[in-house]
Image 1: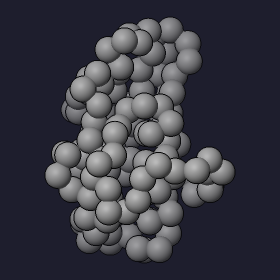
Image 2: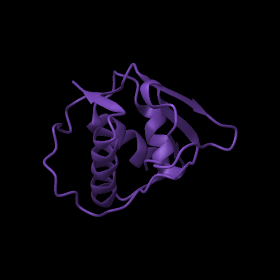
Image 3: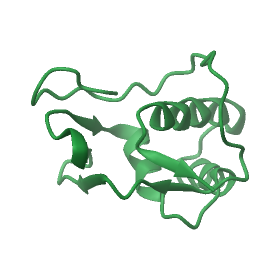
Image 4: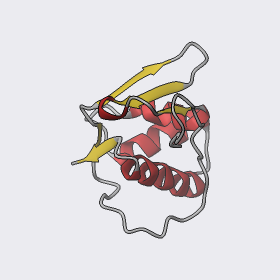
Length: 116
């Protein structure tokens, strides 16, 4: 998901691979976008994300991952976001839960979200 060359974008990976790092959140936690993160939804449905303190790099999130990002509102738990997405897009709950977990791990690793 992270672009590592100046002004270059890279689409997020929404994979099912298990992350071997220990997570710092649970399904009951509520994700919030960090204050130092700017973002916008583009006309094509993608989401452009940039950290204020690192304006040389930005992230482009698309597809289902963009729809998840748009659900992050500092009010909904990860479990609630999962339920909304499963119902809205008719997704298989078991597989989607795993994908959702990987996506939130990635957001945490890139320091784009906090969990409470």
